[in-house]
Each structure stands twice: as structure tokens, then as C-alpha cells.
Image (spheres, helix red, strand yellow):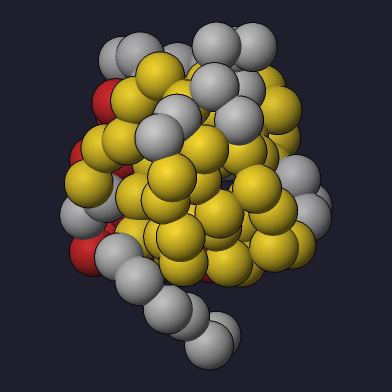
Length: 91
């Protein structure tokens, strides 16, 4: 998968949770390449578990796309283990 920028987990004011690679950041707006959103998660220890371990079999992960997010509330580093889980998650 072609990437640019560091892998991150982003939350938004509208309760969105997204994984992707930062391509641009301006204030509370962030552009992500190869972004995926976590539509639903279960049996995780909060959203930061998605940054540490990635989605599990109970999660529902959206399709991949390049997006711009508005009203970003947090940007978290993602471990190599979590990157693999995000990139392999079915949709």
C-alpha cells in the first residue's frame, strides 16, 4: 500500500475514529491518505486500543479512501502491530 506521512489514529468532534497516513495538517483539519474509519468496535479498551493493537474481529471497518477531516480532537501514534491490523481488516 502506497503511503505518505506517519500512520495515525484520529478522532473528531463528531465522534469519528479514523486510521490513515497524514498528508497535510492545517489547524484542526487533517488530510489522510488510505484512510479507514472504525464504524463499530467491541471488546476493546477504548479508542486508544485501536492505536495500540488495531481493530479486532468484532470491529466493523470502512473501505479505504483519501479524505480531509474537520474538527479533529486527537491525533494518536499507531504501533506497527496496529498498522498491520488496520490494513488487513476486512470491509
